[in-house]
Length: 360
Image (cartoon, rainbow, N blue to C red; front, side, top):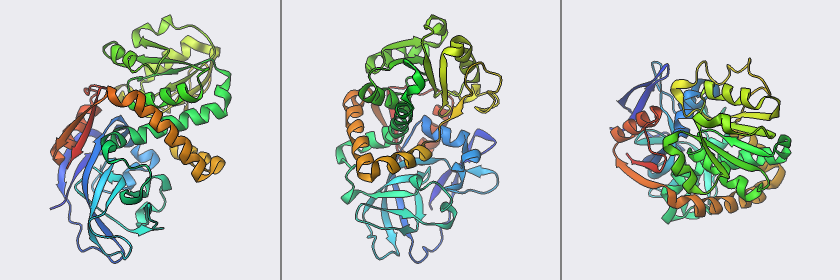
């Protein structure tokens, strides 16, 4: 019997494994057996902002529950679509579950779009599936890295693209909170590659300082308790932590020297206060939430699919060369392991030097 991890939307730490009856596969549909996915802080963000940004709508569940989206690999085990064969493998947006039915449309050699009715209103970036046999990004030897880092890296890439297009709002340095997070590492790597003139300062917990310094991606690494030691040069902040108190401290410290305040994700869930929108009383610029799909559309519009893909690929290989060896892959089997990993990351108890991969 197919299963999924259900999360209570109003109490994210309340979870259970539910049996799912997919029924008979409709005409034109394809049934996927999920082979593997990673569980990262990115998935926690999907849950935290699930209602506001529609993340719960991709894989619906009943009675106030939701299924957290993941990124990973799956195999076609049943097909009622003439262009999709049983046995082929795909990469894309998957539920924290064992199976998924999709309705392929816009099918090409390299991929397709899930045109299921409930997914059509969503951003197309999440509805695309790569067919691994003809996917230029696929490297059989780096499947784990793609799951662990890929979506987070692309968010970091898009933040740098946005900031560079705005000439970093006149700032001389960028302050990254939760500097050990994989999205922050992605941004730091792309900024080092494409905006080397901007100084990169990573903020992290005291216990993570050595790991963050060891990546070599930051010009300086500062513990949260030492924010007062930072200078007052013109700066932009990119907040990955979602910690309302930390954000307020940064705004008070930099004041008018803070040129832009960017909110991305929420890794410190228990400290997000009233949410990332409760920022109206802060000195300096109004914090602005970064929504990656919008910037992806802008990137592809400006550079075209080929140009955008080439830039992303260049930075992806650069990132892997720098960061790939700093993270150990922890492979766990079974959906219960996925539920446990989700709760560990929700509670902030996962070592940043470990990347968790689930084989459900």
